[in-house]
Image 1: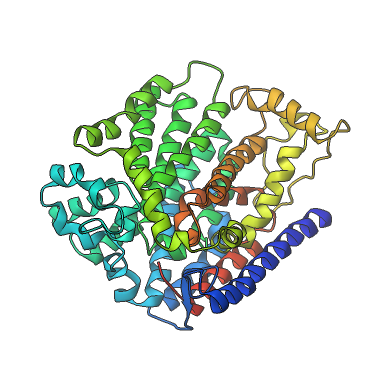
Image 2: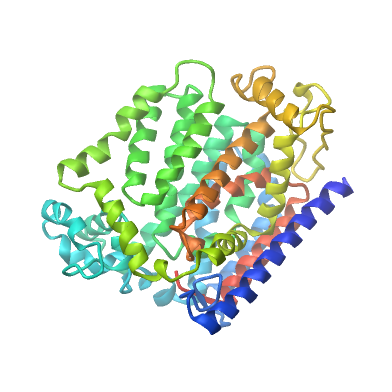
Length: 485
């Protein structure tokens, strides 16, 4: 047991060194060449130690989740646990946002010159605006869109236009919307993990999904809302592939995935996670016909309204290199983005990802059935012995014997199924990184992918110690930095 813990700590140390390198190299580039366009690299933030009205609440929520989260996650009825996770996630996100005060933390975040609420008045005639949307993407075009509007398909600003028309206009309601909907993303991840792996793993992951440093940004940007829509598309697909109201959940998954692609171009990469879900499903007729029927709805509506997604994306790439994206050095951000990811997922997730990799490379030396039951939350996780034929043979055997069969039947291992789901999310994140279209600000842009990495917390032993580390990091980030998002 000591050896796995040392490996966990070594992984965390390596991640800390990555962050330190990103800070030091970033400061050198910032002060020497001024080519990063962030004030506190690798984060889009400024140094500014402060406390606020959310400080006491954040301390209380953190202490409560550390002290009681693992036990309650193990004991609460499943549906009650989902409601409790949503409520606790909202409490944590609200308290962190209010450290910056009501105005800066909530009410004005989405009203700055880059944000969606700046263009509400330009959607008086929605069909006409959609037909004309691509004409205003490039810098230099007449009345070009603000950065975030130009950088996203029109479903993103249209969400806030519709809120405004429903009588929920202004930055405060927009912030409330993003926090409330965004916090439901954690519930979606739990639903998917339970469907694809097992309930014991979902319960072990729950406290790590709630008490995450990602909440620092989940409550301050529209990307939290995007993350929730994307997460529910995967959750419904997980329910569909495991036979839960196949037609309804399959159609809902496709519908939400279509909406996801019209909220953010980059979230089309959720297709990688969706493919993993289909792989992990039972070997029977998949829900593809229903999902494909659902996925056509949103694109069809926007296309008939006159918006061309592919043309808009082509123009976005050009706009990206017209602005800061054309100045920020790829050679720095391709690895500094990963340092940002360390800060949003926290040290516990870094250790959990090490265990995820170990799970993918190992095959049990004992019968699989003995490994499917999970010990109490505070108990050590048994260490598996690698197969003597090596890692490649282990992967092939694992995929053949334990992934393809239906969940719950002999020969399946929930640990491996969860590990593959997490690995798919990490692969999608790496593709986004290598694309060069996410240079900086990934602490908010990659929130949708990062949430799925948090589920790996189910593999950790000593959950309270790791949860404490998560809370401390989040509190330090929010109290020492004035985050830009």
